[in-house]
Length: 211
Image 1 (cartoon, rainbow, N blue to C red):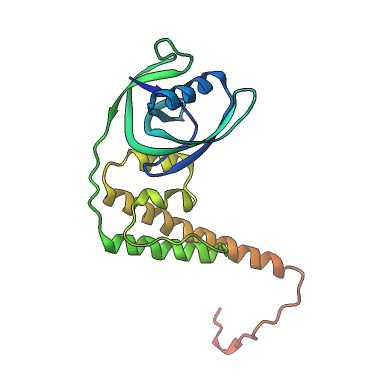
Image 2: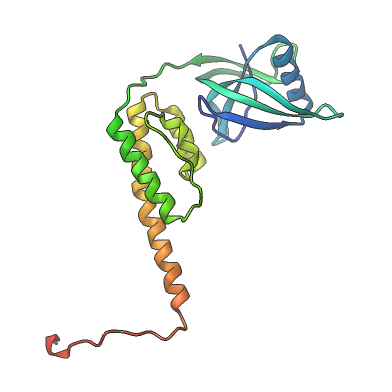
């Protein structure tokens, strides 16, 4: 059985997650992690249920507060699916559950990675993002997933895909849909700026008109 800390967020393997721990039950969980060197799971709470999540391990307690609260950093490790959920882990305040750890096909393709990075660059240019993050090939899809504007349900869908090629194609498809929308919004902003300004139009040649 795995201790569980359900949250409305998606944690990917290899991701560092900063958390402020304030509830008594999770203060107890972090104390147990520190003292007994155990990991815990963060299943994503979405659509009023929990199903998929990621196992995390406590990396560092950054700050402790007099009232028992703390700031911590965790590292995502393995993806799991919850098979049984219990409101209380035996003898504890926090929740727990039986989980199935999922395998993954991590075979990838450099061409897909390059295509994904090209589209990320285009998105950042369209958004005029200063000092965008830099990604080197090879990389895994999880490294860029939080940085391209995915909604929670899209990040969650990515978490459920057990094939790296599928994940790369999913992210590329998202960007190919998002970039034209961003371009159209940029065009709309320019049109709005021009309202009320004097406009200089090229005269039309009426000889080419037909009725």
